[in-house]
Amino acid sequence: MSNGATVGIHDLSFATTEFVLPHTALAEYNGTPVGKYHTGIGQRSMSVPAADEDIVTLGASAAAPIVARHGTDGIRTLVFATESSIDQAKAAGVYVHSLLGLPSATRVVELKQACYGATAALQFALGLIHRDPTQKVLVVASDVSKYELDSPGEATQGAAAVAMLVTADPALVRIEDPSGLFTADVMDFWRPNYRDAALVDGQESIGAYLQAVQGTWKDYSEQGGRPLEDFGAFCYHQPFTKMAYKAHRHLLNSAGRDTDEAAVEQALGRTTGYNAVIGNSYTASVYLGLAALLDGAEDLDGQAVGFLSYGSGSVAEFFAGTVVPGYREHLRTEAHREAVERRQPIGYDRYRELHEWGFPTDGGDHPTPAGTTGPFRLAGIGGHKRIYEKR
Ligand code: HMG
Image (tube, rainbow, N blue to C red; front, side, top):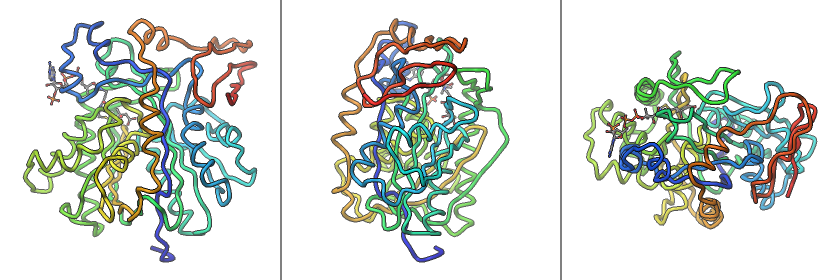
């Protein structure tokens, strides 16, 4: 490391939506045996945004507790990672910067590469802090996952934001060099600018993810990374929680190891709790895996955790972190459980209505129907400008 500083995640907070659709309701509507959802893909429910929630309100809700705890001193960069962008020019993070009252002496930028964006943001943050360890970087990963109604991807929707304060001498997880990297030009999942919902070739996307796992691990090993046996747990990108299991078995096989199911469960089972009930939160998903791991009952002091971040298209990165002794004093376990439990269950018809809802594009004044009880809301649009408010 360039200046000897340890750098990593000092604080982590997440937020999710006002509403939740249980997979039982989706299964009942479309006649799918619910076992396909609960066991086949490992999902129980999905977060559904109210009409007045979006990546900005979710991102600000995730980051506000971090600013409340640490203040704004030293935060000179806010990196907002998303693939559910709300504007082709202005970074969503600029709205978050304003809602949180961050100082004007801040650089704000938006990053995109499907579900990989937040990891790029984290790596950029680490680089900035190596350059000047007195600075802090606020990384916000926020996404709303949306597929066509009645498509195979529909059951893997979700929405959430994770905010991380990245600093020197972090309280939660020290992030290590090296990283294993992998990029391949594949069309497994994409969303052209004129579409609201993503397009996906489901089986191709699973294959592309597995290829990326193998590629990142190969590069990680060649770069002198830790041996597999060092890791106490692995946080994978989880488009659905069973994908992490497929990915880890593939990693073990390609590294010539046995796939002992008890060991696979021990490595992954503690990382899936939030993703199973929130659904795919795209770029936030791997860090919701970390939140579940840290918030769990087991003491992880000093343990090495492997991170596998995958973004369709595709770019992936494998890297390691060490859980900092004493991390438990800095967790937000109660607030995280509350964020999940406070969601109001909705039925299939209400979900469908929200899925189809959108602003007119005529440039008129359009207030948003009230829905969220969270701290921030998208109040409407007027003259093609989005208007946010603190509640
Ligand atoms: P599908 O094709 O309808 O489902 O959709 P399936 O037939 O493959 O069944 C799924 C699993 O359920 C199978 O298990 C079945 O056997 C099992 P597997 O063989 O895979 O182990 N099953 C049952 N189990 C118990 N009881 C039953 C039952 N019936 C079947 N009754 C698919 C699955 C994932 C393709 C679909 O949900 C989809 O298209 N999802 C969206 C794409 C996706 O999530 N891809 C993952 C990799 S790409 C990625 O992670 C990137 C992404 O996050 C985007 C980004 O980077 O921005 C998506």
